[in-house]
Amino acid sequence: MIKLLSVAIVAALFLESHQQTVELPCNYPTHIQCWTVWFDRDDPSGSEDRETFSDLYKENTGKICRKPQGIEATTLSGLSVAAAGEVIFKNDATSGFVCRNVDQTQKKMCSDYRVRFSCHPPFCGEGVCWTDWFDRDNPSGTGDWELLKDLRK
Image 1: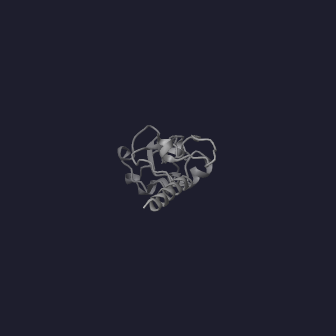
Image 2 (image 1 turned 135 degrees about the horizontal axis):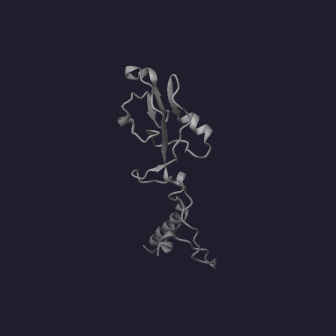
Image 3 (image 1 turned 90 degrees about the horizontal axis):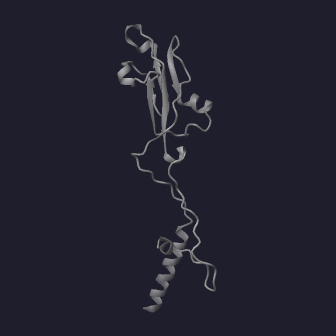
């Protein structure tokens, strides 16, 4: 019985010490929104107002995350898309935003829009995935013990 208990304790210590080296993806609460600055690269032209993700990502290196979680668009005067009352061709985080004049009623031109993107918090400098470094113990005759259960204390 003591041998079995000893083996179980050694196995648990081994597993606990090796779990710390496994990298797991960070889980961020879905209600946290980390928004980029506003972008307005295009003015309404004869055919459309175009704020596409691919163009904005290329032109603004490091200012937009690679895979945004969401997009928000407003007119330059601050009206929401719904309040502007225009028909929108594209409005998603993958494609970006496109308002085409041909889709508007009464031959009206699209307003001038700006967009921003929602990214995971680390992109905007919020949140962390790693703890600080800990050194609880010094090497001794049996080893250097940095066990999670002891660090939590």
